[in-house]
Length: 230
Image (cartoon, rainbow, N blue to C red):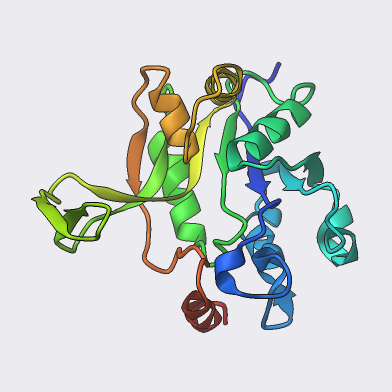
């Protein structure tokens, strides 16, 4: 066991991303001669403080092996799942013989290629002494509305303490593995790692993210990413 916790990265990259409307999964769309997934991995691959990167790949993925970066010494692959939490859980199991219980794991969306080094530094620095972990996020600036099934406004929601969750979401290895194993065993539904941690009764910390750290979901997002990835 290491006295000093190490940092690992998990990138779930088994999704299809139909809303972008491309003829391949969105993580393999090319921006400035590199796929989105390669740009995302580049956010971490040269950092001396990152021990390894687990990329969760779909079983029938024909693209991953064509990327020059796929056999980089820092990269480990894990089987992707139908849902995000399954891919992350599989990735954590791939680290069972490598990660110590108190090591940190950053889970980052494959389709967030514009993450800044300053944001990673901030996440690591502000959570260094935290027992559980936390996530990058941005405070809500717009007026928030709650709607019904007909998209009619039901109420205006107080935005003062609302945040937009981003990634990376960084937690101690043993807490994250325990939380996600619990999700799998009890067939719970979670939309991010922080939600799984919350269901253990723990409180992740919110760390200021940045606007450029967008998640590519629609075609318009590709244009924004092209601007940031220069």
